[in-house]
Length: 124
Image 1 (cartoon, rainbow, N blue to C red):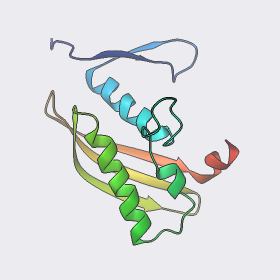
Image 2 (tube, helix red, strand yellow):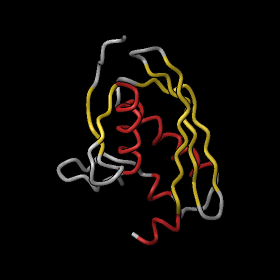
Image 3 (spheres, helix red, strand yellow):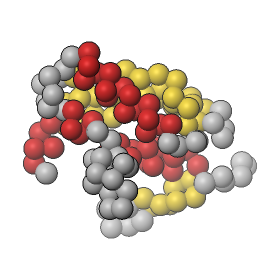
Image 4 (cartoon, rainbow, N blue to C red):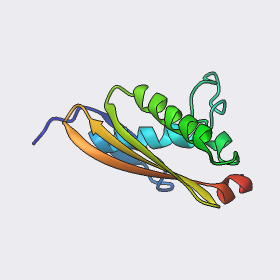
């Protein structure tokens, strides 16, 4: 059995705390980073994603490049991951990002799909 490299927990599943290890923890950390709006974290205004601010901008090459650049910067902040590629998609109600990631500690390739829903954002 492989030795555990990283340990953590998640409260995203409700009142019970779920223990996370290694790649699952690294994935949850990335998800948390993307789901935090830039400027939302106390004492760390540079933390988070600017995708939330770009969701209501007209979808053009400039906006798409800004989303991709944000993804590159977020993944670069976590040394456990190396970004292999980014695809972005926009529809009337959502903006989606597909990341091809290489988890460096165990040499695993992962595909992570994230959806940013405009209707959810309006309700917050």
